[in-house]
Image 1 (tube, rainbow, N blue to C red):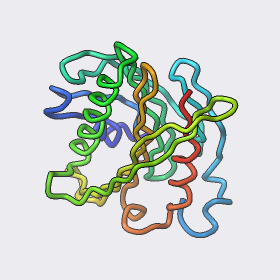
Image 2 (cartoon, helix red, strand yellow):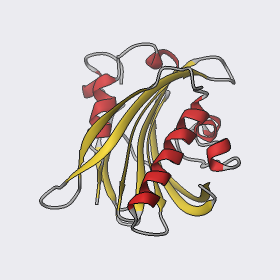
Image 3 (cartoon, rainbow, N blue to C red):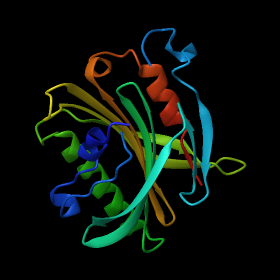
Image 4 (tube, one colour):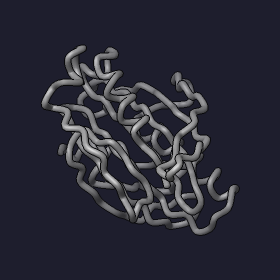
Length: 203
């Protein structure tokens, strides 16, 4: 896994009050779903409180992050296929409180956009989504999906971020796909991006 790309995505600015680096975050035709590059498997994280469908074996890391003046623990699991990263980040909140959850999600969204290099004038597409929980039977949870494109400040290559954010109880989640290079120029990986995002289920 290429750590500079991961570090850039999770380096934050004003919202997170400093630089936060998690060394973990960060397919091409109609036949890509059958490609051996995508080795889909369901990963269940008891510690993170979610199940996710990854295209490869994920690696993990943990670090404290600062959100709205609080230092909170964050864990991350991520798998990489070529120049695309598939990751789930989980922030543990100090209380089961709706206001805390809203504040955390707003900070996480702003941090993702800042890390991508997106600015206020950039076109950010957002839409409400219903995410099915990992409970049996599954329960619907309301979240938000965002997509924004940017340019890497390191090599000036295009990047595209698609993410779903949701909070349940004392956890806030971000399921993220970061596409770089040629994959960020078209929709060649649309099926894989959707498969990963719809395969994410919080407890």
